[in-house]
Length: 480
Ligand SMILES: Cc1cc2nc3c(=O)[nH]c(=O)nc-3n(C[C@H](O)[C@H](O)[C@H](O)COP(=O)(O)OP(=O)(O)OC[C@H]3O[C@@H](n4cnc5c(N)ncnc54)[C@H](O)[C@@H]3O)c2cc1C
Image 1 (tube, rainbow, N blue to C red):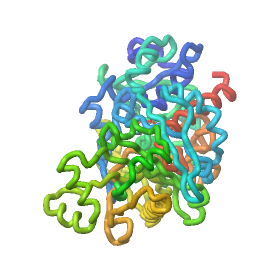
Image 2 (cartoon, protein in one colour):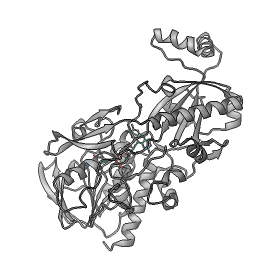
Image 3 (cartoon, rainbow, N blue to C red):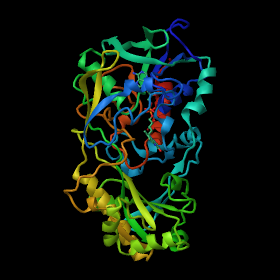
C-alpha cells in the first residue's frame, strides 16, 4: 500500500531503501506474510526531472555519461529505460567471488519468471577459442508490472517521493533511518530490525561513504567503500563483409530481438561470440561478448550496390567517407560489450558539492586499463580467424584496437558494478557472502555494487538471483 508518515505506524520488520528491481523483488518476496515491510523510494511513480536532481554528481576520467543520465530515480529504478537483455554469469566469472555459480543457479528459474523470459541461455562451443551464445530479451517493465502488487499489498508499505538521508544506530546495530518526504515536506524516522540498501550501483557506495565519514559505530571502520568500481565497456569493434546465407545456415541464430537495438533492419541476424575459458586463460584476457550483426543489404538498388562496393576497399572508402562525415557500413558490424577488471583506483568518492539535504554528492573516478583494449583486440582477431577458416567473411577493425595511443571512450556507462563488493576479507570487500556489511549486525546491501567481478552478461539477472538468495538467507536465519 502507499504509505506516508502521518498515516502509518513507523515500526517495521524490514526496511528496504530503493525501489529498483532489487528493492521491488525483495519486498514482494514478503508479500502476504505477517512481516511489516517498508519500501522507501526517492523518486516518483514515473520519471521526473525533479527527482533526477538527487542523482547529480561528477565524473573524472573517460566515463561517457553524467551520473544523472546513467541511472533513473523513480519507482522501477533504472529499468525505467533499460534494454531488457538478460543472461546469467559464466562459471569462470565467479573465480573472485566468495560464492560459486551453482549458489545462484538454484534461483535462475524463479528469476526468469520475474523477467518473463525462458530460463535458457544458449552456450555452444565453436572451437578451442570461441563459444556462440545468446541472451534472453525481457519485456518486463518493473514499474508497470509490479506497482499494482505493491499498491495492493497489505503488509508492504511504499513510501514514494521519500529520500533516505541518514542511517542511525549504535554498537553496530542499526535502529532507524532518517527520511524526507517530499509530500509532507518533513523529516521522519523509520525503525526496523533489518535494513537493506538497494539504491543502485553508485548510490549504495555514496550512502555508505556518507556514513563512514561520520565515523559512527554502524559497521567496521576502513572498509574499502566505493573502490573497485567497474562497468561493461561497449563499442563498435569493426565492420565485416560476410556471406549471410552461410552464416545463417551454420550458426543458426535465433537472437533477432537484438537486431532492432542495433538498428540493422528486420531481416538482419545477430551472432554472439564469447571466449572459451581456455582462451581467457591462454591469452590472459577478460570475458567478453561480441555481436556480429548482419545488415539487410542486397544488391537490389544502386545505393546498396555502391555501399557494397565501398566495402571491398575499406581503406580508400574510409578516407572518402570521412570527407562526408559518414561511416563505412559493410555487410555486418561487430559490436562488443565486455568485462572490465576491478581496479582499486576506479572508485566512487564524495565531493564538496552538496545535495538538497546537505549530503555530499558522488564523483566517479574512472579509466580503462590496457587489459580492456587487449580483450577487445584478441576477441576481434579470434572472430576474424574463425570467419576466414570457415570462409564466412572478413573483418575490418577499428584503429583503436591496434594502436595503443588512440584514446577511445566506451559508448556504454549503463552497468554500474563494484564499490561495495562481496568478500570474506574486510581489507578488500565491504559485504560478506550473505550481503551483510562487515561489522554490522543488521544492514545489508543488494545490487550490482556487490559484484566482485562482472563477466560480460548484463547485470540485472544476477542482481535478482542474489536478491532471491538474500530472501532465503533472511528466512533461514531470522524469525522476523
Ligand atoms: C540505458 C540503460 C540500459 C540498461 N540495459 C540493461 C539491460 O539490457 N540488461 C540489464 O541487465 N541491465 C541493464 N541496465 C542496468 C539495469 O538498469 C540495472 O542493473 C538495474 O536497474 C539495477 O537495479 P537496482 O534495483 O540495483 O538499482 P536501480 O534500478 O538503480 O534502482 C535504485 C532505486 O533506488 C532509489 N534510491 C536511490 N537513493 C535513494 C535514497 N537515498 N532514498 C530512497 N530511494 C533511493 C532510486 O531512486 C532508484 O529508484 C541498463 C541501464 C541503463 C541505464
